[in-house]
Length: 73
Image (cartoon, rainbow, N blue to C red; front, side, top):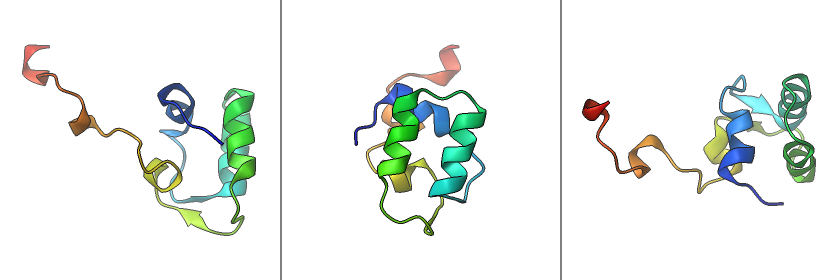
C-alpha cells in the first residue's frame, strides 16, 4: 500500500468519520483511481472508524507544511 498526494487528494472531501467500506464506496462513487480503491481494500480493520485522512496516511501534509504566504494571493 502506498499513498501519494494525488491519490490521497481523492479522499479529502470524504464524509469523515468513515469506515473502510464507506471510504471504498465514496471512492468508487467519485471516480477515484483504482490505486485509491486498492489501497483502501488493503487496510486491515474493516470496522474501525477513521476520523480523517491523517488516520489513513499519518504523513499526509497539512496546510501548515507548505511554505507560502496566503496574503500574497
